[in-house]
Image 1 (cartoon, chains in turn blue, orange):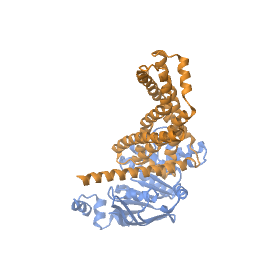
Image 2 (cartoon, chains in turn blue, purple):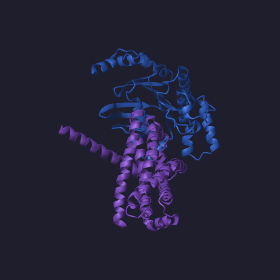
Image 3 (cartoon, each protein chain N blue to C red):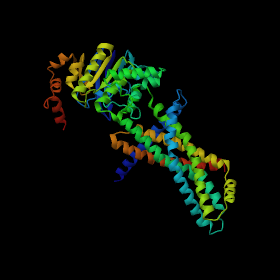
Image 4 (cartoon, chains in turn brown, purple):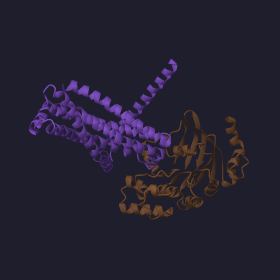
Length: 253
Length: 261
């Protein structure tokens, strides 16, 4: 269970999150949509404790993330994984070392068992047998899938995805969507997916939340979002060049 | 005009204080985490190889040339007063007390410090440092502590090695070109050197090693703005390291002068 209460965050006096509230139930896949740069990734970084809010709070399993000490935060992070936009694979390590990083560094699991877990995670993302390759030898889509394998290798309760399908071909994007869906169905993982790919959002979401001007302006099922009469949501989900979102930007200019 | 000058000056002072505060904060965290288990011995050895072992060729070359140059420059004056024999003691003292530690530190700051900043800076802009945190790993413990310990150990060793090579360079010039006998050169060298000369030089290089590690990692962690940012941070890292090495050298030389006169 993730509860976000009246979150505020400013960077250089610009409010990125402005009184944002959102609840995500256990086992739910929540997709957060919104324009690039609207603060979606900043929100994810608050959930995993990479950023601290100026005001408001984020509760994960009823514990306030910003109030946790280093050990409690480490314990929480062993249950949450994050898939970064560009993969964020460690350049100096091969794929196996990247995927098994947490097991190598934080557990006393035997090397044989680590290798098995790594191979199992890589097979789940359709990349079995590439453990010896370096990240520089992988394509953009493969990097994202390896990042996903790294995220699932620790068998987390919650996975945060930062634009998992951006910049990859439609077939690879669809296979990632399928994977997010199957993790939800089989392992009951709670997922928060930040994206502006509406096809992906409709495919994987139990709930979609639209973020605009630092807050959630509408949340609902994919069907409710698709049928929404809100002009901002309508413009965004239909990808229209003219509408209230772009008018606000034009007026500002 | 004057207002702009003072605004600019104020910004520079604030920026320096911000840098100094950040660096002190990183230094405190690093020292604390150095003694806190688990100890990442494998990563320390890996960094020691990169910082120390791989620096031997360039340190050898530069130290040998410094020995040659210093012997020749000293000979220029000593020959005029007929005291060529004192070249050995002058070179030995200058290299062991001052030139060896400082030149080695400057080489390492340029070679290893720049590489640290570029590596950590690239990790920062590609979110690898954030990824480390999400994988429950403390970036200071994982990235800074091994570099801090490795440079603290390897820089004194490299300095000791540079001292020997520098003296060897001077020895070659004096025995081959200036007609000083080998035994006489060695005798004068060892008579003029005291343990405290060696100790103060190596102590300074230990401090320089830790400074290089901290400055290079601090600049790497604070990279903003992609490839351009990495380039700027790398330049800043080398410049600040040079300044801090010279400033620390000045401070400790004065301190030792008064403590061990």
